[in-house]
Image 1 (tube, rainbow, N blue to C red):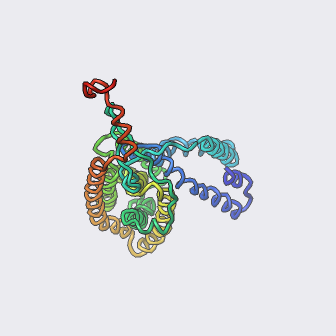
Image 2 (image 1 turned 90 degrees about the vertical axis):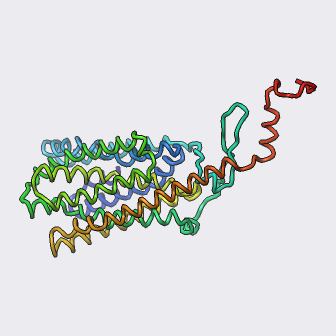
Image 3 (image 1 turned 60 degrees about the horizontal axis):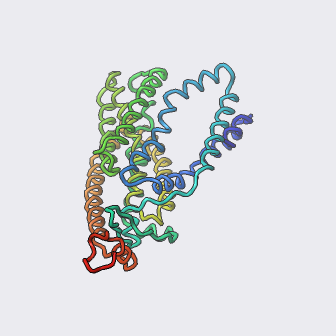
Length: 361
């Protein structure tokens, strides 16, 4: 909100730079938001929750609001646009202030970390003993191999796979003489495709596993690059851009996958490290794309195309191994012995008709 107000008051370019920096600093809230989503959802719900919060919530307004902002700017000026943006930012911040601590949904990762057993009650229901509330450290984060794997993977996706799409608009203008208005129309249509894929990933059960959803979505990067390189025909370009928009869902899926492999006490720090990892990749991708584009306009997308198969293989192997580890952890939890107080409580909860005949009711 303060950044948008700074843009309203900007008279020279560096005033606008201050406003842009303030707006980008809102990313400070992302680790806490991701940790809150993880704590308030079950494993089965997380892919859907992250898809809605980190992707659909951003993509859906992009279908309408850029055109609306352009109309407002042309009729009333940019000051009105930035003032309305400040109001919307402030409203959003006020809504986040209403969030309260939520009960943590205990999953195999956090329970295995705490060593807490699954408690089976006499009525057939089950609960789990509370997990450890000890605060994690970044040193502890670096000792978690799965977490480090996911952080490095996010860095590679941002720096390498996203590299090919940094200058795709320039490529279409320079290589195929597309107009900016045509590119804008294609991008709006593609946003609908990206939104549809996010909804499908959030609701289709085979993609409820974030590792599996991430693997499928990664393939879109290579296919999109191949189509952009193969032809400048409008239908082909439109399909390629749609797949590019579908690939943009990867960020929400990687966040959900990171929550799956991170112990509860380290989740806030892991999401903060993920923001840094993706930020480094986002900073490196345009620089790399610019250098490659200077040699040959096709090179950025060629790099993405060549990097997609090994990245897909790495994601597939990680998904298989994580699924096996998760199944083993669940089996170990079911087989864990009950603590003495819980076992005593369960024995006292046996129905009276199951007592010995001589026992008191």
